Length: 282
Image (cartoon, one colour):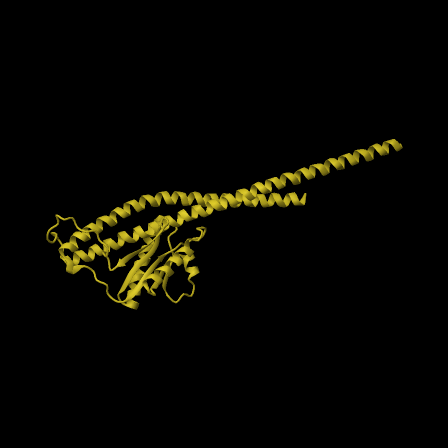
């Protein structure tokens, strides 16, 4: 009886764990659907700002932002939570490959608690910020990122800022500051500078703010989408293993129950034989 109770307790625990994993998977799935809609809208906003910047800088090439300072800062968009497989490990491998390819040693602005755990005591770290768990948290996190960038610029002077993140199964590096490094060419019919209501200097400053606002949202949404997709894959594997263990425990539980029934029948038969023997002696 004690062995069967142990198996039943273990089976009950596995069923509770499976329910939790299934709920986490469903939440991540719903988040991916929401993020996919956000990303489409945000990518359209980025493309619109880039077209406006291309038109503007075609007419005012002297106002194209230039690299200022030799300090290089790299944003690493990792995960805030676990259960996403080797997502953070792959990001760190891409970081080292990026540094070897460019022969650089950038300072790191690490986004995501789980990623930061892999980089503990790394001398390249300039700052660590928590990452977003759901899409609604991205604007708040971006406010912290902008504030931190201002603080780091005060410490290191003007910095060149790029972001390393993932889009699906593809790892990307995007230059953020100075902005507008890879703009599409303006339409051939564009001739001369555009007509502006603002002074050109004020316009390019405002356009830069709009660009950073749009592109940072797009990058963070893309990284968060991939994190949830990896989490779904990881949890699907965990659910399959749990299901296999549950089936094995159910088979074992059935065998133990059969053994108990057999023992009970044997005890009944022995009792009947003993009673019959006593009756014969009377």
